[in-house]
Amino acid sequence: MKRSGILNRHLAGAPAELGHGDEVLVCDAGMPIPPGPRVVDLAFLAGVPPFAEVLDGLLDELVVEGATAAEEVRTAAPGTDRLPAGRLPGLEHVGHEEPEARTAGARLVVRTGEATQYANVSLRCGVFF
Image (cartoon, rainbow, N blue to C red; front, side):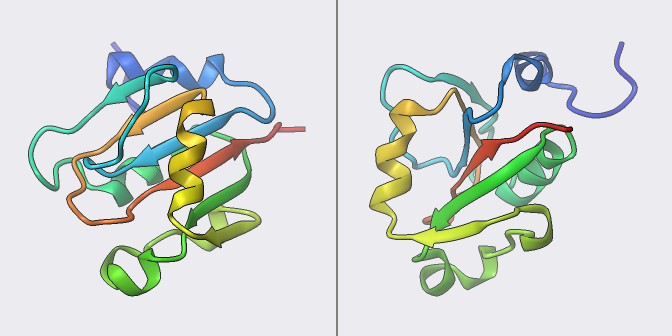
């Protein structure tokens, strides 16, 4: 049994399957997810687990070289604009249509229970060397 880190059996091995340039979307419970990407659905109840906690756990496991979030999160949901810029190099804010459009090309989608609009971020995997 694992002692620490990601304990969810469907998500624990996923970071090892990712490569340089792969996209990982961490999203709220309302994000439309088209067929195609691998989806790990963590949503249990509205708000559980919260977006920020899931993102923090994934950032402990992944090397990230870039990130994209919706510009709207700054105004529509200022309380959820907790994207740790220091841990997200090259964080770019764009219109919410762009992250939604990129969902189909994501290698992995992690759906949280977050019930706040625009609580989504796309992570571009980097390398550790």
